[in-house]
Image (cartoon, rainbow, N blue to C red):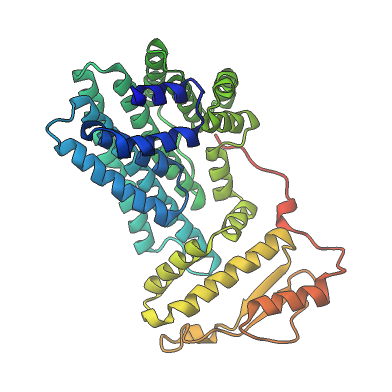
Length: 408
């Protein structure tokens, strides 16, 4: 009864996300064994979905897979619960595959910023390997759709349809991002396949509606809006977003309200991602906002790509931090400020990043140059700005650019 009440209160807007999640955690601890795993699954599913940190999400993902394994091995668990568990794992696996691909693309663009050749065979092979991770996910989604049909379970059938289409959407978006990032022509989505995906999401939305599951119906419709956005049908996507925003707002579905607002503003995840791939300003802005964790991961990638000893990693990390920090200055302070380093160390594997290279600042517009050289890039940037930039009327931050292209 508590399980049903918690779910109903959340889906009818009486509980917000945090309250619902806290209740699920408590039920996972206090519920009878046959229900405890179900609550544990729901808790991990939601935590994984909302987690943004790479390391934390990986920990949750591992726990979720362990819980799914327990459920599928439990002879007393119902077929419906086992199917629900596999759907949760499939969606989580898709998120992790997408995160790996985005990380690969970030490595690709950061290589460009550091002056390395972008499409090296190892980099291309790694991206292809990650792209291939989608194939078994789509195959598993086919199996789960068929299993939901066999079980004659309409809600799980609708969930399976949404999960399957989302995996295909993510695969399509990642492919387009790679093509745009490497300045290749984008391929149109085959019309027949596009219509089939639209029909599946429409069927899922109608299934949720017949069952009285408003949250599921709104989620399915917004997934359809996402697909239409990727297919270049922005007006249709915005019409759907406008239709679902009011009921989502009334029910307090915060995540769905945010998704609807993104469509209505024309600032969807797809548009932002493609803008990053095709405009220098957005690419610089993305790299400028990279976290320390992301930069350290990239430094490790660079060390491996160059083939240097592991004891030089701290020096490479500092070089990556300097790259990010000067991009922050270019984005927010002035595009003409640049950081240069003495690349003599890179001429031999014996000296490559053996120590921190000497650096200096320049102004690419007026040809100013630092009077001193030092490995300490933060001190250099601060001194250079104080001497040459403080009263400069030609200062031009990249973030001032207003144009943001739309993508078909």
